[in-house]
Amino acid sequence: MSDLTINIGKRIIELRKLQNLSQEKLAYKADIDRTYMTGIETGRRKVSVVILDKIVKALDSDLATFFKDEKFA
Image (cartoon, rainbow, N blue to C red; front, side):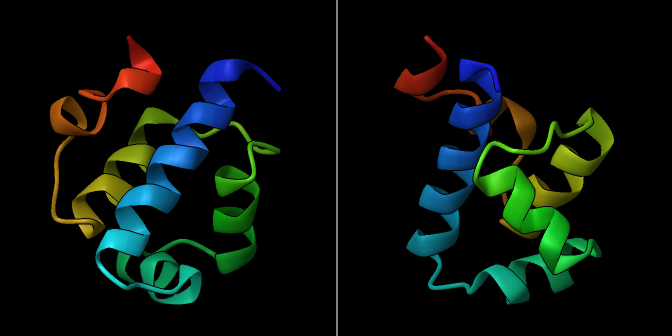
């Protein structure tokens, strides 16, 4: 997968762990399947903007803040 796909997964993991959320709880909050979340976090699945927005909102953030990280510089 591309560096962008991998970095998106890493950023989700980082933010999820900061909130002490399990992958399962985040998937539930974002209303997506846990196995799909696993694929996104590991960089094996490409994520649409719509799904990424749902995940980021479940992390109590927004897309602009999500991408303000050195991984995306």
